[in-house]
Length: 606
Image 1: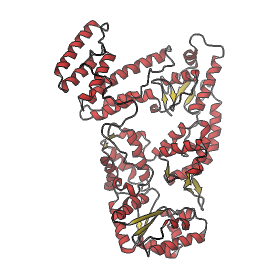
Image 2: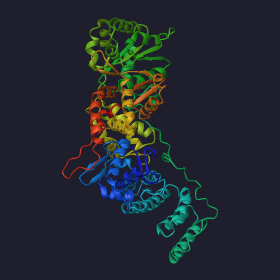
Image 3: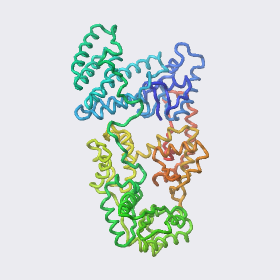
Image 4: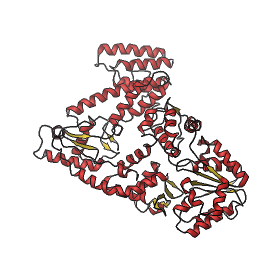
């Protein structure tokens, strides 16, 4: 959820709220998390002349807002109503947090991070703060405080940016002086930027102008062209509004929950020893089985490690996943395949989880054994399926000879997996971040996709080119980042569309033969006839919770498949809770506890 009050009010980019609802939402946003009494809200909406039905109309506003932004977002307390969304979901709080963070950064060597933080903070402003409450005292005072903080942020931004290149900030320094000529600090920054670019005469002129302006007061405010060099366009050299990356191009080095593929080999770190071992095994006997727990990186090792190396050596690569019809999947192997064609089977456990025909299962495994006599064959298999492999004698002997167990990364490899992609992409790591990540992951062999997703979300919260400890913790950490991403997506979906979201995700999950939830590929064409389905799918893809390759949709990791399968059971309970919360808009009597449902029971569906 995103609530903007630094300009026209919007919720998740939409301005669909009515005038009264806008006021009722903005008023508690002035003191996030703290209650605003019903009397105060009535005063904010109607001023000195409220109608007799004001209290009832106020309750109706709250009900509508809960439907629009989530029943848990507005909490009823004995003292009124409180807006209880995360602080970074309200642009005014997000702005203030960025400015405070910029103040705290050391001055030496941190100008890039400071400039980036403040650039992002200032871009949150789109107009007057709390525009629907110009006459309400609390909003007027909060808008004044934020406005002063904005002036300070502009000055801090120019100061930090000037440490990198003074010439680029000159237009902004001129514009700042014209906007607030009585702020002495702005003249100082202008003169400093002029001096550092070699325009010493203009710097002295600016200081003389400062003395003149301060002596005259605001009456003789300098004209548009008087605050610096002649014919300087204050917009020259400035970036257009909107989000921007820092000056140094930073590419995303992370896959999130998705495995690294053959084309991602340059960004794949920490597994070189395993890759070389597998290549040696293939050279000796033409068969390798990468076996390990879910999330241990088997698919990435096979694709971005072994297969990428084989392709560089001139081999032809064919990759399949068995699905429910594994023999049919083998038809992807072309008829002209020779001994240098490598057959790779990813997620071989699908043979046991999805194929309900034992004859087809046996035929598929027998054909794999045959193919291993003709060409290199490599497969990945979840460790908990090894017992079922032993039921097929010929295939099990093949796996036994080519078995390579994939375990947890050691500490050195973990550090390489964290730092390698970051350094390659030009990202810096705040001291302490790598140690924190290593501690959280080293004892969990299945946490690598979660680590990648957490670092992907940390990158989105970076300061300049630096990934920070605070940014990582804000993601929810290794085991909380996926849930937080799903929760945020769920919160962005309109209430009446959430059942459709749940249905969309459940269609990407199939019950296995033994009842286990298994992710399933589905053709995207099945959803394109419904625009709402297509929009929700795109939201899932943008959040990297679902992939869309060659017209096929798939959940990015099987952990989400299990969560999605479980969410159906929680949906009924959540629906009842939402209904209960919606009907409790009136403030309770003092001492009555407040209850509010959360989206957590079905957020995993996102």
